[in-house]
Length: 462
Image (cartoon, rainbow, N blue to C red; front, side, top):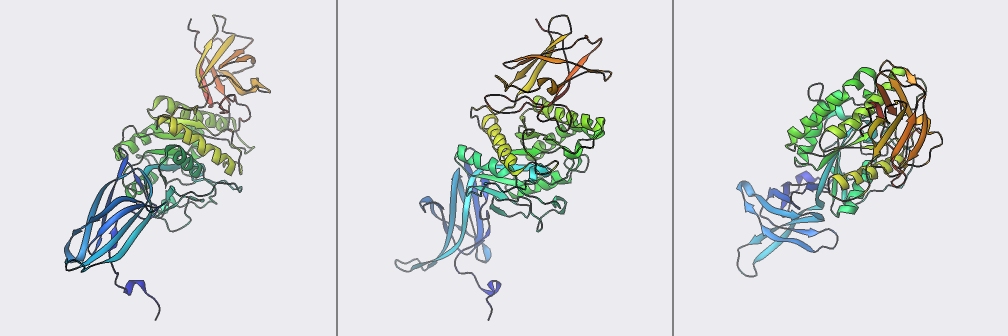
Protein backbone atom coordinates (compact mmCIF):
# COMPACT_ATOMS: atom_id res chain seq x y z
CA UNK A 1 0.00 0.00 0.00
CA UNK A 2 1.42 3.46 -0.84
CA UNK A 3 2.50 5.52 2.16
CA UNK A 4 0.01 8.26 2.94
CA UNK A 5 1.14 10.60 5.70
CA UNK A 6 -2.38 11.99 6.16
CA UNK A 7 -3.66 8.54 7.20
CA UNK A 8 -0.99 8.06 9.86
CA UNK A 9 -1.73 9.14 13.43
CA UNK A 10 1.23 11.20 14.72
CA UNK A 11 3.15 9.60 17.55
CA UNK A 12 4.42 12.00 20.23
CA UNK A 13 3.93 15.74 20.25
CA UNK A 14 3.03 17.60 17.06
CA UNK A 15 3.37 21.34 16.50
CA UNK A 16 0.36 22.97 14.87
CA UNK A 17 1.21 26.63 15.51
CA UNK A 18 4.66 28.15 15.83
CA UNK A 19 7.52 29.51 13.77
CA UNK A 20 8.44 27.63 10.58
CA UNK A 21 11.92 26.24 9.95
CA UNK A 22 14.41 28.96 8.92
CA UNK A 23 12.26 31.66 10.58
CA UNK A 24 13.98 34.70 12.03
CA UNK A 25 12.16 36.17 15.03
CA UNK A 26 12.47 39.92 15.43
CA UNK A 27 14.29 40.60 18.70
CA UNK A 28 13.21 43.20 21.23
CA UNK A 29 15.68 44.28 23.93
CA UNK A 30 17.97 41.45 22.92
CA UNK A 31 15.44 38.61 22.96
CA UNK A 32 12.51 37.20 21.00
CA UNK A 33 9.23 35.61 22.06
CA UNK A 34 8.50 31.97 21.25
CA UNK A 35 5.07 30.37 21.59
CA UNK A 36 3.96 26.92 20.41
CA UNK A 37 0.69 25.05 20.13
CA UNK A 38 -0.02 21.51 19.07
CA UNK A 39 -1.51 18.17 20.06
CA UNK A 40 -0.86 15.91 23.01
CA UNK A 41 1.18 16.63 26.10
CA UNK A 42 4.50 18.45 25.70
CA UNK A 43 7.71 18.95 27.46
CA UNK A 44 9.88 20.94 25.02
CA UNK A 45 13.35 22.43 24.88
CA UNK A 46 15.47 24.73 22.73
CA UNK A 47 18.99 23.69 21.70
CA UNK A 48 21.81 25.20 19.70
CA UNK A 49 21.70 23.98 16.10
CA UNK A 50 25.52 24.24 15.95
CA UNK A 51 26.56 21.91 18.80
CA UNK A 52 23.36 20.65 20.39
CA UNK A 53 24.01 22.45 23.67
CA UNK A 54 20.97 23.32 25.77
CA UNK A 55 19.70 26.88 25.40
CA UNK A 56 16.40 26.43 27.25
CA UNK A 57 15.63 23.33 29.37
CA UNK A 58 12.69 21.04 28.85
CA UNK A 59 9.47 22.62 30.08
CA UNK A 60 5.97 21.16 30.48
CA UNK A 61 3.21 22.45 28.29
CA UNK A 62 -0.39 23.23 29.20
CA UNK A 63 -3.04 20.63 28.37
CA UNK A 64 -6.04 21.89 26.44
CA UNK A 65 -9.23 20.20 25.30
CA UNK A 66 -9.20 17.38 22.73
CA UNK A 67 -5.57 16.44 23.42
CA UNK A 68 -4.22 19.83 22.40
CA UNK A 69 -1.34 21.57 24.14
CA UNK A 70 0.30 24.95 24.22
CA UNK A 71 3.39 26.50 25.74
CA UNK A 72 4.93 29.95 26.02
CA UNK A 73 8.68 29.47 26.15
CA UNK A 74 9.12 33.16 26.89
CA UNK A 75 12.19 35.03 25.78
CA UNK A 76 14.86 33.37 23.67
CA UNK A 77 18.13 35.31 23.58
CA UNK A 78 19.21 36.98 20.37
CA UNK A 79 21.26 34.61 18.25
CA UNK A 80 20.98 31.07 16.99
CA UNK A 81 20.49 29.15 14.99
CA UNK A 82 18.29 27.17 17.39
CA UNK A 83 16.47 23.86 17.27
CA UNK A 84 13.15 23.50 19.11
CA UNK A 85 12.40 19.92 20.17
CA UNK A 86 9.20 18.38 21.51
CA UNK A 87 8.33 15.07 23.08
CA UNK A 88 5.33 13.30 24.58
CA UNK A 89 5.63 11.94 28.12
CA UNK A 90 3.30 9.12 29.06
CA UNK A 91 2.74 6.72 31.97
CA UNK A 92 1.00 6.61 35.35
CA UNK A 93 3.54 8.82 37.13
CA UNK A 94 5.03 6.03 39.25
CA UNK A 95 8.83 5.68 39.35
CA UNK A 96 10.07 3.72 36.35
CA UNK A 97 6.68 3.89 34.66
CA UNK A 98 7.21 7.01 32.51
CA UNK A 99 8.01 6.78 28.81
CA UNK A 100 8.92 9.43 26.24
CA UNK A 101 8.08 9.69 22.55
CA UNK A 102 9.93 12.21 20.41
CA UNK A 103 7.79 14.82 18.63
CA UNK A 104 8.13 17.56 16.05
CA UNK A 105 11.25 19.70 15.75
CA UNK A 106 11.69 23.21 14.36
CA UNK A 107 15.11 23.55 12.75
CA UNK A 108 17.29 26.58 11.92
CA UNK A 109 15.34 29.09 14.04
CA UNK A 110 17.03 32.43 14.73
CA UNK A 111 16.39 35.50 16.85
CA UNK A 112 17.74 38.63 15.20
CA UNK A 113 16.54 41.50 13.01
CA UNK A 114 14.13 41.57 10.10
CA UNK A 115 14.61 43.86 7.10
CA UNK A 116 12.09 44.34 4.29
CA UNK A 117 13.28 44.53 0.67
CA UNK A 118 10.87 46.80 -1.22
CA UNK A 119 10.74 48.73 -4.49
CA UNK A 120 11.02 47.64 -8.10
CA UNK A 121 13.31 45.52 -10.28
CA UNK A 122 16.69 46.66 -8.96
CA UNK A 123 15.45 45.89 -5.44
CA UNK A 124 14.21 42.44 -6.48
CA UNK A 125 17.50 41.98 -8.35
CA UNK A 126 17.99 41.49 -12.08
CA UNK A 127 21.73 40.75 -12.12
CA UNK A 128 22.58 38.20 -14.82
CA UNK A 129 26.28 37.41 -14.49
CA UNK A 130 27.68 34.52 -12.40
CA UNK A 131 29.18 35.82 -9.15
CA UNK A 132 30.34 34.30 -5.86
CA UNK A 133 27.47 35.16 -3.51
CA UNK A 134 26.43 31.89 -1.83
CA UNK A 135 23.65 31.25 0.70
CA UNK A 136 24.61 31.31 4.36
CA UNK A 137 22.82 29.84 7.37
CA UNK A 138 21.68 32.69 9.55
CA UNK A 139 20.64 34.87 6.59
CA UNK A 140 17.12 33.74 5.83
CA UNK A 141 14.33 34.86 3.52
CA UNK A 142 10.56 35.06 3.86
CA UNK A 143 9.61 34.45 0.26
CA UNK A 144 6.51 35.74 -1.49
CA UNK A 145 4.98 32.31 -0.92
CA UNK A 146 4.88 33.16 2.79
CA UNK A 147 7.41 30.41 3.60
CA UNK A 148 10.77 30.87 5.27
CA UNK A 149 13.89 29.57 3.56
CA UNK A 150 17.62 30.10 3.55
CA UNK A 151 18.18 33.25 1.49
CA UNK A 152 19.32 32.39 -2.03
CA UNK A 153 18.96 33.84 -5.51
CA UNK A 154 16.56 34.59 -7.08
CA UNK A 155 14.62 36.22 -4.24
CA UNK A 156 11.51 36.67 -6.36
CA UNK A 157 9.22 33.63 -6.65
CA UNK A 158 7.96 32.87 -10.15
CA UNK A 159 4.83 31.11 -8.88
CA UNK A 160 3.20 29.91 -5.66
CA UNK A 161 2.92 33.42 -4.24
CA UNK A 162 0.45 34.82 -1.74
CA UNK A 163 -0.36 38.01 -3.65
CA UNK A 164 -0.70 37.85 -7.42
CA UNK A 165 0.02 41.60 -7.64
CA UNK A 166 3.60 40.80 -6.53
CA UNK A 167 4.21 38.43 -9.43
CA UNK A 168 7.24 39.55 -11.44
CA UNK A 169 7.15 38.43 -15.06
CA UNK A 170 10.74 39.46 -15.75
CA UNK A 171 13.82 37.26 -15.60
CA UNK A 172 14.67 38.00 -11.98
CA UNK A 173 18.24 37.12 -11.09
CA UNK A 174 20.82 38.30 -8.60
CA UNK A 175 19.73 40.58 -5.73
CA UNK A 176 21.73 43.03 -3.57
CA UNK A 177 19.90 41.83 -0.45
CA UNK A 178 21.93 38.68 0.27
CA UNK A 179 25.18 40.65 0.52
CA UNK A 180 23.32 43.16 2.70
CA UNK A 181 22.12 40.47 5.10
CA UNK A 182 25.43 38.62 5.19
CA UNK A 183 27.47 41.70 6.17
CA UNK A 184 24.95 42.65 8.86
CA UNK A 185 25.10 39.13 10.32
CA UNK A 186 28.90 39.15 10.21
CA UNK A 187 29.20 42.49 12.00
CA UNK A 188 26.30 42.16 14.46
CA UNK A 189 26.70 38.52 15.43
CA UNK A 190 23.04 37.52 15.17
CA UNK A 191 20.78 36.19 12.38
CA UNK A 192 19.19 38.45 9.78
CA UNK A 193 15.82 37.80 8.19
CA UNK A 194 14.88 39.34 4.86
CA UNK A 195 11.28 39.86 3.73
CA UNK A 196 10.95 40.06 -0.05
CA UNK A 197 8.23 42.50 -1.13
CA UNK A 198 9.71 44.18 -4.24
CA UNK A 199 8.23 43.82 -7.72
CA UNK A 200 9.83 44.73 -11.00
CA UNK A 201 8.33 47.66 -12.87
CA UNK A 202 6.28 48.90 -9.93
CA UNK A 203 5.59 52.63 -9.76
CA UNK A 204 5.34 54.57 -6.53
CA UNK A 205 1.55 54.74 -6.97
CA UNK A 206 1.38 50.99 -6.24
CA UNK A 207 3.01 51.69 -2.86
CA UNK A 208 1.28 55.01 -2.09
CA UNK A 209 -1.63 54.62 0.38
CA UNK A 210 -3.92 57.14 -1.35
CA UNK A 211 -3.26 55.96 -4.91
CA UNK A 212 -3.16 52.24 -5.71
CA UNK A 213 -1.27 51.12 -2.61
CA UNK A 214 -1.65 47.40 -3.29
CA UNK A 215 2.04 46.58 -2.87
CA UNK A 216 2.18 48.38 0.49
CA UNK A 217 -0.80 46.35 1.68
CA UNK A 218 0.88 43.15 0.53
CA UNK A 219 4.14 44.16 2.21
CA UNK A 220 2.36 44.84 5.50
CA UNK A 221 0.67 41.45 5.25
CA UNK A 222 4.04 39.73 4.83
CA UNK A 223 5.39 41.64 7.82
CA UNK A 224 2.41 40.52 9.87
CA UNK A 225 3.08 36.91 8.89
CA UNK A 226 6.66 37.35 10.09
CA UNK A 227 5.51 38.58 13.50
CA UNK A 228 4.44 42.17 12.86
CA UNK A 229 7.69 43.97 13.66
CA UNK A 230 10.76 44.74 11.55
CA UNK A 231 14.02 46.60 12.08
CA UNK A 232 13.82 48.58 8.87
CA UNK A 233 13.07 48.76 5.14
CA UNK A 234 15.49 48.79 2.20
CA UNK A 235 13.90 50.78 -0.66
CA UNK A 236 15.13 50.96 -4.28
CA UNK A 237 12.53 52.41 -6.62
CA UNK A 238 12.07 55.25 -9.10
CA UNK A 239 12.88 54.17 -12.65
CA UNK A 240 9.15 53.85 -13.45
CA UNK A 241 8.55 57.38 -12.12
CA UNK A 242 11.46 59.06 -13.95
CA UNK A 243 9.09 60.95 -16.22
CA UNK A 244 8.41 64.72 -16.18
CA UNK A 245 5.04 64.75 -14.38
CA UNK A 246 5.63 61.83 -12.01
CA UNK A 247 9.13 62.94 -11.05
CA UNK A 248 7.89 66.38 -10.01
CA UNK A 249 5.62 64.86 -7.32
CA UNK A 250 7.74 61.96 -6.11
CA UNK A 251 9.13 63.65 -2.98
CA UNK A 252 5.71 64.30 -1.47
CA UNK A 253 4.36 60.91 -2.51
CA UNK A 254 7.37 59.10 -1.04
CA UNK A 255 7.10 61.11 2.19
CA UNK A 256 3.42 60.13 2.46
CA UNK A 257 4.26 56.49 1.80
CA UNK A 258 6.94 56.41 4.50
CA UNK A 259 4.54 58.03 6.98
CA UNK A 260 1.92 55.38 6.12
CA UNK A 261 4.34 52.50 6.71
CA UNK A 262 5.46 53.93 10.02
CA UNK A 263 1.90 54.53 11.17
CA UNK A 264 0.72 51.04 10.25
CA UNK A 265 3.72 49.40 11.93
CA UNK A 266 3.57 51.62 15.01
CA UNK A 267 7.19 52.69 14.45
CA UNK A 268 7.37 56.48 13.93
CA UNK A 269 11.16 56.36 13.47
CA UNK A 270 11.40 53.17 11.41
CA UNK A 271 14.70 53.35 9.43
CA UNK A 272 14.37 53.49 5.65
CA UNK A 273 17.52 52.84 3.60
CA UNK A 274 17.15 54.19 0.05
CA UNK A 275 19.18 54.08 -3.15
CA UNK A 276 19.66 56.97 -5.55
CA UNK A 277 19.01 55.64 -9.05
CA UNK A 278 21.79 54.25 -11.20
CA UNK A 279 21.55 55.09 -14.90
CA UNK A 280 19.67 54.25 -18.06
CA UNK A 281 21.81 53.88 -21.15
CA UNK A 282 19.03 53.98 -23.76
CA UNK A 283 20.47 56.39 -26.36
CA UNK A 284 17.11 57.82 -27.42
CA UNK A 285 15.95 60.49 -25.01
CA UNK A 286 14.40 63.93 -24.87
CA UNK A 287 15.66 66.85 -22.81
CA UNK A 288 12.60 66.69 -20.56
CA UNK A 289 13.20 63.02 -19.89
CA UNK A 290 16.86 63.65 -19.01
CA UNK A 291 15.77 66.39 -16.61
CA UNK A 292 13.22 64.04 -15.02
CA UNK A 293 15.97 61.57 -14.05
CA UNK A 294 17.95 64.38 -12.43
CA UNK A 295 14.85 65.76 -10.72
CA UNK A 296 13.94 62.35 -9.32
CA UNK A 297 17.46 61.75 -8.00
CA UNK A 298 17.31 65.19 -6.35
CA UNK A 299 14.08 64.15 -4.62
CA UNK A 300 15.81 61.01 -3.35
CA UNK A 301 18.69 63.13 -2.03
CA UNK A 302 16.24 65.60 -0.50
CA UNK A 303 14.26 62.83 1.21
CA UNK A 304 17.34 61.78 3.17
CA UNK A 305 17.93 65.40 4.20
CA UNK A 306 14.35 66.23 5.22
CA UNK A 307 12.65 63.01 6.39
CA UNK A 308 14.01 61.76 9.73
CA UNK A 309 15.63 58.32 9.67
CA UNK A 310 15.65 58.11 5.88
CA UNK A 311 19.12 57.50 4.46
CA UNK A 312 20.42 57.37 0.88
CA UNK A 313 23.38 55.88 -0.93
CA UNK A 314 24.40 55.98 -4.58
CA UNK A 315 24.40 53.17 -7.12
CA UNK A 316 25.71 55.36 -9.94
CA UNK A 317 29.12 53.66 -10.17
CA UNK A 318 27.67 50.17 -10.63
CA UNK A 319 27.98 48.18 -13.88
CA UNK A 320 24.78 47.17 -15.67
CA UNK A 321 23.51 43.80 -16.91
CA UNK A 322 21.41 45.51 -19.55
CA UNK A 323 20.27 49.08 -20.24
CA UNK A 324 18.88 49.71 -16.76
CA UNK A 325 19.52 46.83 -14.32
CA UNK A 326 22.48 46.56 -11.98
CA UNK A 327 24.90 43.72 -12.62
CA UNK A 328 25.48 40.91 -10.13
CA UNK A 329 28.84 42.38 -9.10
CA UNK A 330 27.30 45.83 -8.68
CA UNK A 331 24.54 44.31 -6.54
CA UNK A 332 27.05 42.82 -4.12
CA UNK A 333 28.78 46.18 -3.77
CA UNK A 334 25.45 47.96 -3.33
CA UNK A 335 24.22 45.45 -0.73
CA UNK A 336 27.38 45.93 1.32
CA UNK A 337 27.10 49.71 0.92
CA UNK A 338 23.55 49.62 2.31
CA UNK A 339 24.65 47.35 5.15
CA UNK A 340 27.35 49.83 6.18
CA UNK A 341 24.73 52.58 6.26
CA UNK A 342 22.58 50.41 8.52
CA UNK A 343 25.55 49.61 10.74
CA UNK A 344 26.35 53.31 11.13
CA UNK A 345 22.93 54.95 11.27
CA UNK A 346 20.82 52.18 12.81
CA UNK A 347 23.21 50.13 14.95
CA UNK A 348 25.59 52.87 16.05
CA UNK A 349 28.79 51.50 14.54
CA UNK A 350 31.25 54.10 13.35
CA UNK A 351 32.27 53.79 9.72
CA UNK A 352 32.52 55.99 6.66
CA UNK A 353 29.30 55.01 4.88
CA UNK A 354 27.79 58.17 3.38
CA UNK A 355 28.31 59.38 -0.18
CA UNK A 356 29.66 62.90 -0.76
CA UNK A 357 26.68 65.26 -0.76
CA UNK A 358 26.48 68.91 -1.78
CA UNK A 359 26.32 70.92 1.44
CA UNK A 360 26.37 74.45 0.01
CA UNK A 361 26.71 76.39 -3.24
CA UNK A 362 27.62 80.06 -2.93
CA UNK A 363 29.13 82.92 -4.89
CA UNK A 364 32.62 83.96 -3.80
CA UNK A 365 32.54 87.64 -2.84
CA UNK A 366 30.34 90.05 -4.75
CA UNK A 367 31.50 89.43 -8.33
CA UNK A 368 28.99 86.62 -9.06
CA UNK A 369 31.57 85.15 -11.46
CA UNK A 370 32.96 82.52 -9.09
CA UNK A 371 31.09 79.81 -7.22
CA UNK A 372 32.24 77.57 -4.37
CA UNK A 373 30.67 74.13 -3.88
CA UNK A 374 31.24 72.46 -0.51
CA UNK A 375 30.53 68.75 0.00
CA UNK A 376 29.65 66.92 3.18
CA UNK A 377 31.04 63.41 3.81
CA UNK A 378 34.15 64.14 1.77
CA UNK A 379 37.80 64.81 2.61
CA UNK A 380 39.36 64.66 -0.83
CA UNK A 381 38.24 63.71 -4.34
CA UNK A 382 39.99 61.55 -6.89
CA UNK A 383 41.44 63.53 -9.82
CA UNK A 384 39.01 63.65 -12.75
CA UNK A 385 39.89 63.74 -16.43
CA UNK A 386 37.27 66.39 -17.23
CA UNK A 387 35.82 67.91 -14.05
CA UNK A 388 34.02 70.60 -16.05
CA UNK A 389 31.65 67.99 -17.44
CA UNK A 390 30.40 67.06 -13.98
CA UNK A 391 28.50 70.30 -13.37
CA UNK A 392 25.75 72.22 -15.14
CA UNK A 393 25.00 75.90 -14.52
CA UNK A 394 21.76 77.43 -15.72
CA UNK A 395 19.50 80.38 -15.08
CA UNK A 396 15.87 80.18 -14.07
CA UNK A 397 14.97 80.95 -17.69
CA UNK A 398 16.79 77.81 -18.78
CA UNK A 399 19.94 79.33 -20.25
CA UNK A 400 22.94 77.02 -19.89
CA UNK A 401 26.07 78.94 -18.90
CA UNK A 402 29.54 77.82 -19.98
CA UNK A 403 31.93 77.41 -17.05
CA UNK A 404 35.23 75.93 -16.00
CA UNK A 405 36.46 74.21 -12.86
CA UNK A 406 39.19 76.36 -11.35
CA UNK A 407 40.20 73.87 -8.68
CA UNK A 408 39.17 70.88 -6.60
CA UNK A 409 40.73 71.09 -3.16
CA UNK A 410 39.70 68.84 -0.29
CA UNK A 411 35.91 68.87 -0.15
CA UNK A 412 35.58 72.11 -2.11
CA UNK A 413 35.13 72.76 -5.83
CA UNK A 414 35.62 76.25 -7.30
CA UNK A 415 33.78 77.13 -10.54
CA UNK A 416 34.04 80.25 -12.69
CA UNK A 417 31.83 81.76 -15.39
CA UNK A 418 32.59 84.61 -17.79
CA UNK A 419 29.42 86.62 -17.44
CA UNK A 420 27.63 87.04 -14.15
CA UNK A 421 23.96 85.94 -14.38
CA UNK A 422 21.42 88.76 -14.01
CA UNK A 423 19.14 86.65 -11.80
CA UNK A 424 19.24 83.42 -9.85
CA UNK A 425 21.82 80.80 -10.82
CA UNK A 426 21.16 77.07 -10.43
CA UNK A 427 23.79 74.34 -10.26
CA UNK A 428 23.39 70.60 -10.97
CA UNK A 429 25.84 67.76 -10.55
CA UNK A 430 25.92 64.64 -12.75
CA UNK A 431 22.98 65.71 -14.92
CA UNK A 432 20.71 63.42 -16.95
CA UNK A 433 19.80 59.76 -17.02
CA UNK A 434 23.29 58.53 -17.90
CA UNK A 435 25.83 60.90 -16.30
CA UNK A 436 28.53 58.40 -15.31
CA UNK A 437 31.54 58.84 -15.36
CA UNK A 438 30.77 62.55 -14.91
CA UNK A 439 30.81 62.26 -11.13
CA UNK A 440 33.21 62.98 -8.28
CA UNK A 441 34.51 60.04 -6.25
CA UNK A 442 35.77 60.40 -2.68
CA UNK A 443 39.39 59.23 -2.34
CA UNK A 444 39.15 57.53 1.07
CA UNK A 445 35.81 55.74 0.81
CA UNK A 446 35.64 55.29 -2.97
CA UNK A 447 32.01 56.44 -2.85
CA UNK A 448 30.53 58.49 -5.71
CA UNK A 449 28.86 61.79 -4.96
CA UNK A 450 25.09 61.98 -4.83
CA UNK A 451 23.48 63.57 -7.88
CA UNK A 452 22.02 67.02 -7.18
CA UNK A 453 19.75 69.07 -9.42
CA UNK A 454 19.00 72.79 -9.76
CA UNK A 455 20.34 73.86 -6.37
CA UNK A 456 20.23 77.69 -6.07
CA UNK A 457 23.61 79.40 -5.72
CA UNK A 458 23.46 81.65 -2.65
CA UNK A 459 25.35 84.81 -1.73
CA UNK A 460 28.54 84.05 0.15
CA UNK A 461 28.18 84.00 3.93
CA UNK A 462 31.18 85.86 5.31
